[in-house]
Image (cartoon, rainbow, N blue to C red; front, side, top):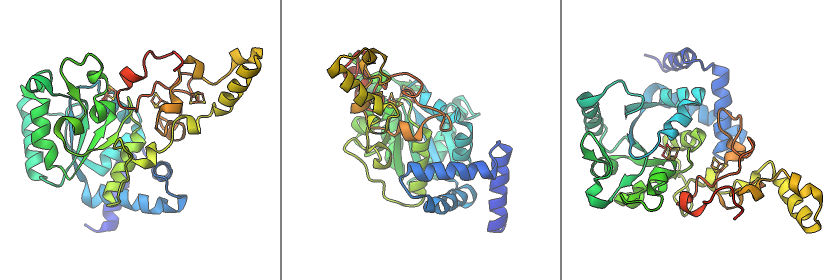
Length: 315
Ligand code: FSX
Ligand code: SF4
Ligand code: F3S
């Protein structure tokens, strides 16, 4: 089959999932911006995705450990981005969206790892119990720890999606009786971390596109891609003007202080949280917590359930 025909079929498949070619291009532009590239690079991004959607279909093994599945939800509830991701990669195993169950599902996992040994991308959601030989978390009577130790090192790249897989997240919150940890800490394999509770699907997709393009993905000291996590939420917050205003009013004691729109006094952790929420936004670029009136709770920072609480109190 000719390349041109393949590309046409790719767009037809997207169309069937409700994503028009025009919308596809719109998302490619959003991705390009998220990746910190100039608009002139959009063509390259389009090509990479087209290529992946036609000839390549990057094999992905998606593991679920201890988590709430909010990370999968975040991308499945962004239907167009979700559809494009699913047309670009080939998900060989994903407990939430696969049709197979029981022994059949276990066989799919085993077969995928054998068939794509050293070639698949492993996306992990959720933390891993490490105490008592991992007894606190199992799938199909196998501990998360054992699964991770045998599957993760065989991947070409490992993406820890969400704060649980990245740093332990909620399952690792004190007192953490099961000794939950993020993937890297639990098994000592380097991971690309895309934290957030939930993380932004655009950041996942941008990472996948960079991987497809064989680009280097510079990370910060916490394993997060710098294209998404170099700045704090506060740096680009739409309420920033009121933050300064608030400080000013505080100093001069005006009544307006209580009416300030900055959520700092409600415990906003934007100034200490690295994430691109104000620019990438969620739900197809609709909004993000602070825009919706909720303070940032620092959900992309390691150990935030312990270090950022009590929420709603000024730090
Ligand atoms: Fe954790 Fe994701 Fe928070 Fe939930 O899988 S990052 S609890 S949004 O679902 O892992
Ligand atoms: Fe900073 Fe939060 Fe205030 Fe925004 S709402 S300006 S992130 S403190
Ligand atoms: Fe999380 Fe704060 Fe963004 S709570 S979603 S990092 S605004």
